[in-house]
Length: 146
Length: 174
Image 1 (cartoon, one colour):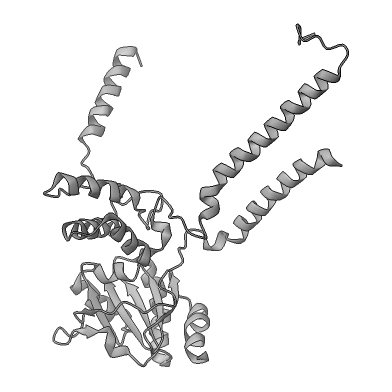
Image 2 (cartoon, helix red, strand yellow; image 1 turned 30 degrees about the vertical axis):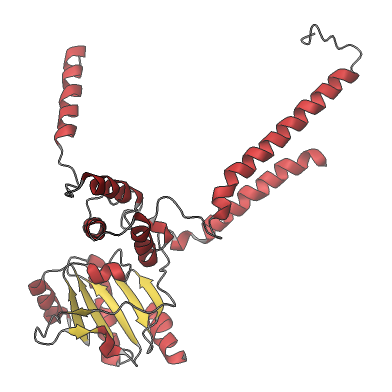
């Protein structure tokens, strides 16, 4: 394939992708609600496909759950109430952002603990090296490479 | 000794994590229901075979029963259907059907053709009751006790063995 044909194919495929119909075409009358709707539907897991959010999934249950989110937003429910509603029925697994609880505490604490552990190890290595260097009679501070 | 300690600990950690993963491989993708031990959602829905008499879940109070979520579009439901029909013939435990997002005429034809294992079939055309039960893929079957509490949930087709062990035996034990 020559360069021109390749470019043409590339451009055509991009146009095609842009022309694919969106899965979710829900439009709420209020732009603020619409924004909350989009955030929420991207945070809720499609239980049938499990690695997609309900906003991205074409399956029937995802559409039902989107309708539920839209209805509850229109009824004036808060984001937290809607998340609780979903978690009460489908478990915490439906939330892509796990909530802080006794079971998930380690999940949230782990990055901090690992960072701290790494810091301690690095500090000990540095201290050990500098002590070795100080005790080495051949060590020349002006030329550490020697 | 000391220089082997850290790699050994790291290896043990990886081994434990992978070991737990292998042990849980059967239940991978199966989500435990938060409904277990809680009151089953109450509902009133049209009755598939008797449009005059809506099905009210409160009519089951005082009895053990199984709630089976199914649809004619669901291939696995056909797989378990024989188990359910046999269970009804044995009279072990009443089964209520929840016909989930289905076409009414197809559902009636399905029961006429394959046999009707259900004491009543509630029609959940919009899928709202299924959401209340946290249903995410048919077939799913709930065991509900005389106080209306969800005791057990099975996801996927029921075999006679699973039916006897997880439903009939549990209902008989208490």
